[in-house]
Length: 331
Image (cartoon, rainbow, N blue to C red; front, top):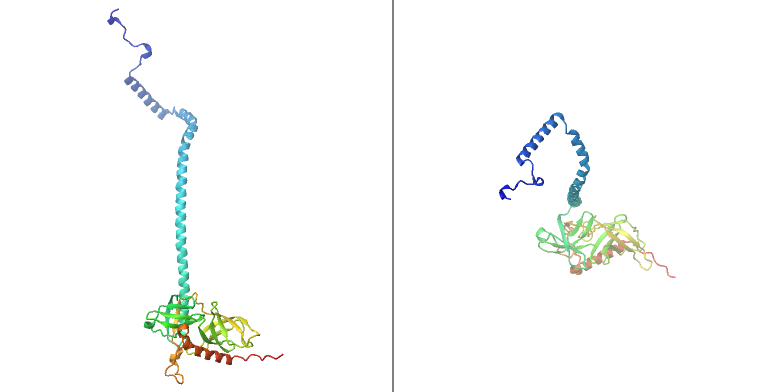
């Protein structure tokens, strides 16, 4: 058979139908018709409703991972924001607590300074305010260092007080600082009188604790727990009428002529920050017979030789002024 007579048309299975352009025109026209018909007549409304009902579960299933991811992101962001707010709240609470604490400290310090100012106005002696810097580095004595010295007019032997009472005495002076031996030091001695009875005595520091001791008082003397002891002014150092200590414990020992009287100091040295340094009253008293100028007794180991005689004299005077002990009967 000649080649030119062969049928070159594709079999029906491979026939492609209308051309692509024809199909585009047909489907475009159909789409425009359906849109116009749906807009004006609403013909596809029921179809869309049925399709929405059928596709709704599928949409929920497909959207579940997306919603879970969004919820997890929001949860993480919420936790981070909550932690940030909690940190800010804690920081603000800390700042408020610090400000409140500072305000309380300033209020207490203001009250102490006002009390010192009132005490300074009541005293007839010249007084200089000083601030405690630190405790003296000596484990065997009770001393503090203040920020006033000889350049500020501080003199050795000057009494030191605060709003509560007697703290001690200046025992060493430097140009810019001064050393104060506290009244609770074992070498300190202060002549006092009982505010209730007027009985005189001598108060000494206690080496074992922060208390004090009233010595050379007869066992039958009129002393009670709670009695207030004030400076008598007989030593030429402390002005009279300053609170020193209060009787905290009384032991009338039968084997001794003197009672053991323990005292609680009125001015606690552990919490003091501001003090008043007074002039010794001996500067304004006439010279003693046989002396060219008034001596200023000092307390402390470095001045023990100068104060030994004065303390012994004061103790003897206090002991003689006290009530004599009851005579013991011989068996």
